[in-house]
Length: 276
Image (cartoon, rainbow, N blue to C red; front, side):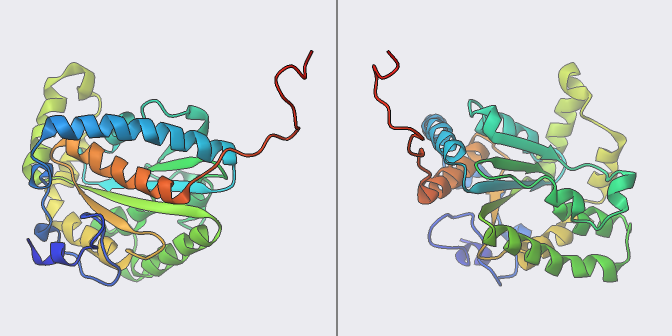
């Protein structure tokens, strides 16, 4: 077991501990290092997803608390696939996905968290961020979009923002989908060779791949400095998609079990036959 792996909690093997430095090379990208039975994993995933569907129904009906899921990854890390598979079958009324791309002119006229705050889930909802406020300490750093003294301050701003959300009834789970550089290359080649995936490939994918070695320390800073008790990070081995889906669903279901949302009491006391 690696040194960093020894620092993780005794519960979920992928949850980081606040205050512990993160070196990504210490963390396996291979789901098979954690589970060697794909068939059993996929069967467990199906069962857990059914439980997730039921728990999400109760969260939506209860209408009091919120769950925010943050997905970050290198390009081709599997954020879209995670959303499609993990949330298949949930009530779409109770889930909102927000993809954060290059900010608009209006968004740039505000502070960097302005557009994020507008997308946080309301009571009863699960909000999913496909990329997030962490782009403002990742992309802006690697591509030198803002000065270092600007993005350095944002780590504290982000921690305080997430603490505010937590104090306001939002449970936050943050997942870094950890893939290898070889796996990214294979997925890029798949995109180029398959007509129904080619549209997802862009020149920016190649630019960011060339910056791989710059993104690694940027992500390590994010995972080290923004792992908190109220907004934990999980490093999910994502080379095998089936394990990625299982690991994330396990965390979500266990979190919702702990939240234990309940259907509210009826607003009026009626019984079958009272409508006659």
